[in-house]
Image (cartoon, rainbow, N blue to C red; front, side, top):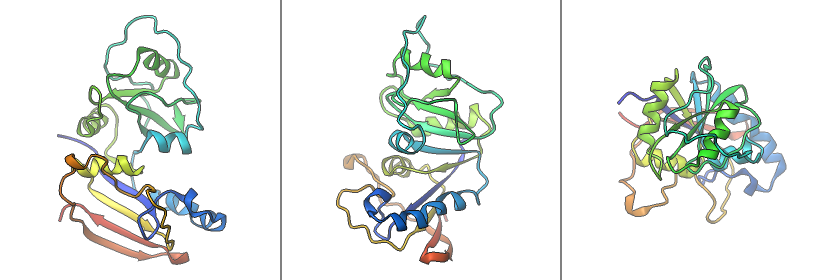
Length: 233
């Protein structure tokens, strides 16, 4: 299977928590907010991927999709909204809930990863917005299929996986991550049931723990440590 090289790039407290709203310290949040993008930009990649909740909270602005009846049944086939795009924001949106003001975010063309249960009205909405989409599974996302299609349909060789924890955990459990880039912040969160870097919700389907191989350590300013791991020796 040809798929993009996947680098999971995350920022967390020392206890693995990733929701900065729980820190309740504006100075801390302001100090560390620029680290994520700064070190994201050190990688050469053509796409980044987030889950629906992260996209809705940080990128789509909570826009509601303007649903209208589709003029005809829509086949469950990929749709390319911008054939000339060279950088991509990949939104994993299994049920088709995200709304967008345009077909780009931060200058990157939006690609929605859907399941076949999504309504024709939502597909028609994405087509009207010229937002690309593909299908990866009937009712649950098949991430191996999603990555294979992203490589086949778009010029994506390297993809940055950037949360949330359930999305990261799903690709981790499927063995689809090649590297981890972790910015470890000097913060102890301690919030119970707060999202962490990797989460697998279905314990019965969880595979064995994944062995990582440390490839680089850098001490940054403000007591931040940048850890890089490979997933295969």
